[in-house]
Length: 172
Image 1: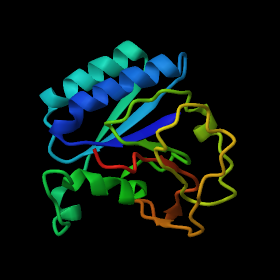
Image 2: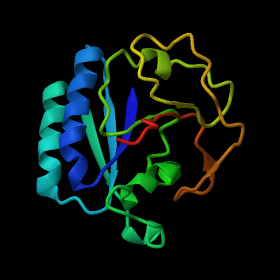
Image 3: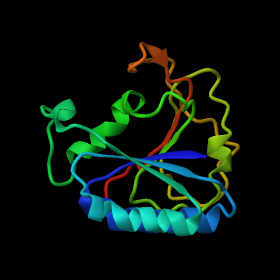
């Protein structure tokens, strides 16, 4: 299972909690974690790399140049990194055809398998909002976007065939 997170240095501790909850509620699951960032230093990434190693996860930090979102409005609550998921197909390896985006400050309290295996019916994105309810959401019909997005790559245009975004939709 390929997972995507976007963080600045303030979200490293919540991400570590999320990774622990992911591990506890998805035992034995092979995970590749792609982390999009722009200003994290090697020493700030080290604890995440070590944690992923202990959990048996592969860890792929991807540095984004600040120029990509230099005009984006940012606040303390909404850093530049929150925008990276919007153009993730431009920054991630071409080999990926499916990825699950998770906010770094969530607790994973159930298996992610139902989300991962959701039939997207050929659509590019789907989203699930936090409902405050526990339980398996595999029977839920997730809202999906009907647009196809061109993917930029060094080897020419391609398509990001499938992704699934699980987002914590509520503030605080």
